[in-house]
Image (cartoon, rainbow, N blue to C red; front, top):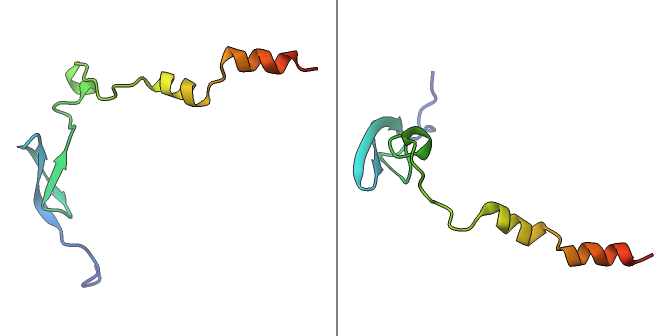
Length: 79
């Protein structure tokens, strides 16, 4: 049995909004949920490509952590 006065209020008919439209009703601790993606517009389920990240992740990683060829050649010349 649940203890009184320690649990959040449960909303069995919470509405999920995406782009201002109600897309589904679920149970939640909040009366309204606002989401950017859901299964109706997610690229995996729709088969379409939606560009979310404008900068490539690999290029950003290489720029941050990758070593340039100059650094590699400079460390090899030292003996």
